[in-house]
Length: 310
Ligand SMILES: [Zn+2]
Image (cartoon, rainbow, N blue to C red):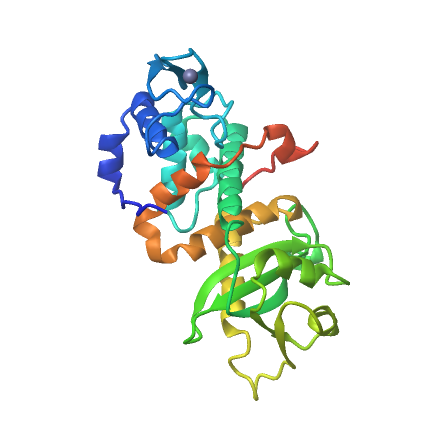
């Protein structure tokens, strides 16, 4: 990937003053080598004024700049999208839909939908990479009954499988988290096959589900019976990541509920996996948003409604 530039708030404001400036920038991201018409291969195009459309000079074929991006088919202008991506990328605690509603002067459902689309781009981008080398694996519960044992929205317990790859020195490198129904049968293997490179060494607790799942296959497995005295460092980074994720989700989003938890986990992982590149995160996230197909509001809520207070 091309080296991404860091951008300050002042630079952002200078560079992206209106929809037109955002359009030009998105064009450069989508056509880094210059325009090529998908119909005739022509290399010259005209910009259609005030629309995210370019027309090939040779054959008249029209290209939608936002097609194949999370910004496609929304009534929200590119400038607001750029601001949303900027705000999300520049606050490591993330941005709530309430705040985005206020800052961008959009409705709450619009703000919520934009954030979910951005999170989808984050999850899709991380889906391009697998954990490798030494990988810690464990499951955790997110959410739980509120005080007094009353259960309500966002308080149901949701099981999550977590993998953290480590450097040779034993420091955390990358993290992946998936909402799962249970740990039965092939669940750990399905998670591993998708998210962990074959040949990796998986370190986990000595639960029978893990031992059964990894007794044969593409991984070396080091199950360690949990005993804090003998193994004080056992899965320590993994447990740190789980606490950080819980703080992130509980802090900004007040518990999104099981249904939407995966997208919040995707945001946590995307951000954590790029913690070394925090100043460049805007351009990285914008690139991720520019190469991810969008998801509709209907698909996002799947018959439900927009959760409050996220
Ligand atoms: Zn053409």
